[in-house]
Length: 371
Ligand SMILES: Nc1ncnc2c1ncn2[C@@H]1O[C@H](COP(=O)(O)OP(=O)(O)O)[C@@H](O)[C@H]1O
Ligand SMILES: [Mg+2]
Image (cartoon, rainbow, N blue to C red; front, side):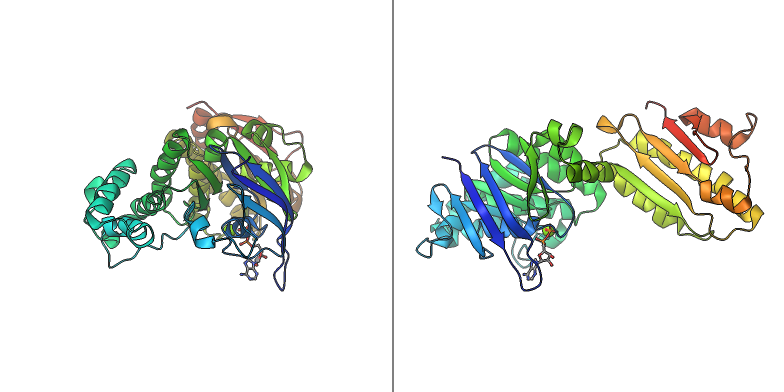
């Protein structure tokens, strides 16, 4: 029998019905990444599984026990299901080790010394043995989230439910948390992970659930979901998350905000530092040296220039599409962008990317060179 069996799960709230008909069976040792647009009920699904929410109808079976039967001992069942949230919820006035010791002492009646030794072992597993006697406030966000993982492991759960465990973290701390999760996955822990980290979903999961329209809209191995999605909405979503778009709709647009959003995208897609650097450099040159001066020279406030960055596997084949057709339309003609071979900006950009003029004036594609 599967570890988790969900049949026709429905959850209605007064103003919305995020889950209409969710069906899933999850085997022991599986790592399921749950992806999908926000508001599609991913959190609600996890919360129904351990009965933090009461389903409107349907069935949930965990380890052969009916989670919707009023006779079921929910607190006993919840001990089998660890939960790691976006916000770590550690007790700030307790030491790191104490945070990990609490549940085994309170719920399993474990003695203090034994709980302490166990906590040290678990903290070692998440790389934080040295921080055992510190307060959570002395730790970084990534470290705190690793403590939260050790705390979940302390109950020896059958499965851990992760709800966007890296979303609240500074991008520089995401990978330390993901690498701990990857380690747990390789040790055979059953995990359900709601995540936006597509590289993690692709590399670590046994299966990916794409949630949309109140159901598990498409489920399959990562190759299917990321390379050959079978249904339209999955396809559109995957294309969207793999792309970064920005519209320059004013001459005094927020430049740092654009660059920040670009670097978040690169971190999320796990583009390496050199890919990020050359992408930034190309965009910087193009925007600052070409696009903005051109718009300024022609007196157009809203050049309406669209940038679209797409990356393929492993951050290879990075393409930047620049669409300035509206701008050309506004000045009624062809404005020379990057077509003078002696132009310094063109030379700088071609050091990092091959420039391909598009099918029509106002469209160019830059292929970033391998890094
Ligand atoms: N406790 C609640 N009360 C009322 N509506 C809720 C509650 N929790 C979630 N919702 C609604 O359910 C929908 C799905 O939410 P959620 O499960 O958080 O989506 P996701 O995690 O995919 O972003 C949203 O429209 C949200 O407003
Ligand atoms: Mg959510």
